[in-house]
Image 1 (spheres, rainbow, N blue to C red):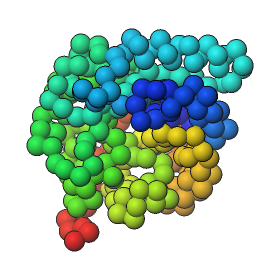
Image 2 (cartoon, one colour):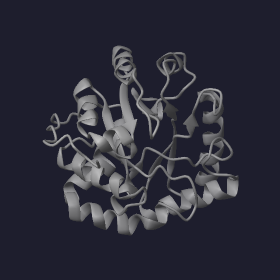
Image 3 (cartoon, rainbow, N blue to C red):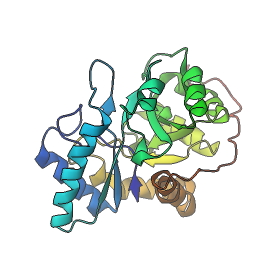
Length: 253
């Protein structure tokens, strides 16, 4: 499997707090079956602003140690950018890294409020020949209230990345129910752990994968966890059928 959303780099954001924790998380990923990991620490203006070059230096040092100990995991640069009107410019200027130096850019929205310029940011990325990937849409309150908002983002040209642990209720029942609706609508393109700590998501992957196989089957799970993420790493376009609208627009009243 390929993990395209993680917070494993040490002492950059609210993820790994030390080098030791970083290596424990990487080894947990390896034991869970992951062969490739995008290191997508947060980029939030005026809070977490480590640039692409500094991230790459840390990743190279980690990769060298993994190679020496013969742990067969490949690490890639990336970021989870918090939405702002400036993030397209910061990507274009080479400050915020794309996923594995591809055209794909991972960004997130606030969990509990609506951003009026989300469509504009998506359009700007597409105009820059980037492919916007929206992180964990199932966790956003506006999507929980109306999943067709996420469908509209896809129709506009964005891709959706859901968190593995949403399927087992880690983020609550509304999040799980919303994920199931988006999966049923064929709106999810990629899965990622969004892991922040040791002894968390990677150690639950057996349970998580079992649940996904039950809900969507092995072949579709493989597409979301291996085939499409590999296309990201190789900078190949992910071609999917347009999702179907979800009939009822009344959720969680």
